[in-house]
Amino acid sequence: MVDRRDSVPSRWTLHGLNNGTIFRATYRGVGALPPWASHFLGRATTWLAWRLLPDTRAAIADNLRALFPGESQTTLERRARIMLRAYADDVVDFIRALQASEEELRTLFEYLPSEAEPFFRELDKGRGMIIVSGHYGNWEAGGIFLRRITGLPVAVVAMPEPDPEVDRVRQEIRQLIGVDTIHVGQSLDTALQIRRRIEQNGIVAFLMDRPIGRDRVEVDFLGRRAFFLRTPVLMAFMTGAPLMPCFTERAGDSRFVARAGEPIIVRRDRPRDEAIQAAAQAFADQLAARVAAHPQYWYHFYRYWEHDGHEAVGR
Image (cartoon, rainbow, N blue to C red; front, top):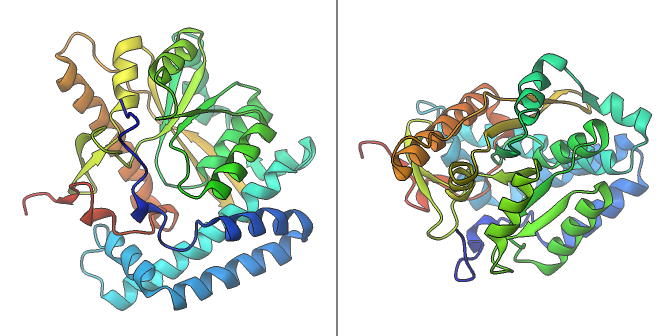
């Protein structure tokens, strides 16, 4: 488990797009402006970021090289601009969804029973559920979908943001929609809180594609060696709860669809480390498939492959 000695690596947030001033201004601005104006300003701001933050632009291009190894740096940096625009649109629509009426919400989300069926089938078994996703698509909007459309309780396991203002706004947002936050490293009983919710047939959600300190498990991701978060898989092993991959993707202008992946059961009849690695790899494969299908929604703004031991397989 992550403990107090582990912290959010500063490189995750040094890209200039995640500081308190920008975050608070965006939150307030979207609430005050009509949708077209919010999207226009969001796209203009991220276009400026693409022009004025060359390190961020180059970092995104470097990340995408795993998907497009034959493309030039110029072409990859054009893809970075598309990604930043998609990110701006996702942020705007997420904030709009926070303030939307019930009727408006149903225009923001496409509810496909066929996509949700595996999710509810597993939850009906009474073992609780561990939702796992990555920094892909509009994962925060997925929390709105769970609370306001399906009515299911959910707790998000997260590290506190390095910027206190960003952390305050994120907590305000989660409280607004009724999503609880379990802060890693703030309490010695974090693992007990997670386990208690699962045993009460609750839902606990993790973003799994960034390890924190020693909390890591090795996987092959997009053909490269990477490390994902180990804790959610360990909790699944300990409790018997399934890992449920979930991805919230754009389905058109200001519309989203929440997709449930294939449930992953962590085998308890195998050695623990072997079972954890196999389950983590199963999630990595599902996330890789979504990223390959929609690379513009894979939101890492630092050099993902140059940190935490990520590297090309066979190098």
